[in-house]
Image (tube, rainbow, N blue to C red; front, side):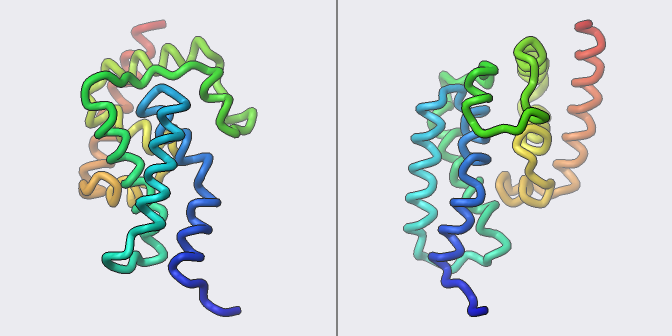
Length: 165
């Protein structure tokens, strides 16, 4: 089997991650239409990127980084992370991945109460199913720092969750 060209690899990465990218953007922007726009813009930037070759093992992280940056750019002032169950279910999730709407609201409100650096790592790892290595490349933060933020955030999340019951 011959090796795929960079463009073919990029197309494959987009195809395999499209639903994840939309869900990733949706949790950051909170609006399906805006999330889809951000993902579309990110895909265009990703496909048109010609400056330096992207190593195949870094393409997925690079694409998520573009989506992350676009979401950050578009949400500097107004965006919240609160997303309705209906919006979540619009993105192809398996029944095991779907949550009860009360739980989604409760978890979102608790995550909103955490410091942003902790909440973001938790969202990216748990909700977006990104590895710490991928999150490290997306945020340009060492893995050890992310793991520490995750552990601290999860402990705070657990305390707030149990306190909220």
